[in-house]
Length: 183
Image (cartoon, rainbow, N blue to C red; front, side, top):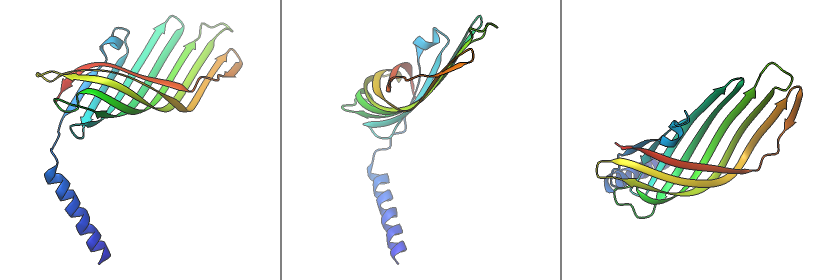
């Protein structure tokens, strides 16, 4: 009987919230235009959960190859954003909380003994603020900045046969400059 009552209560609550809340079915898809100038790509998708709250996922990729030096990096960031006074739903000034994972590697291999390799893997949490503009034609401009702390940090530097564990500062940054479209 207790399971039936609990199930009935859950069904009632879901029905109530389903019929009384305004449905917000919008997704803002964005890209960082500045990164494209240097061959770095960063794509984001911001899902509105209500007029004042959204969740965004952002993934990037960068790589470079200059002679014997190679670089690659993958940042993945998840944001929760609270909008204070939206006009078009999830727009204008917002505060955010984020979690960010970054994996980077630099390698120089010219065939000599002075080769080096640098790797970094970090996971952190932080807070930020930003501003999003949505035009009447559904074009999106989003700029934001956040600062946080790395809770996992594995940074190594290897030169020749010597390996050094690098004590990197625990501070992490998350920045966003993006243009896109609202669907």
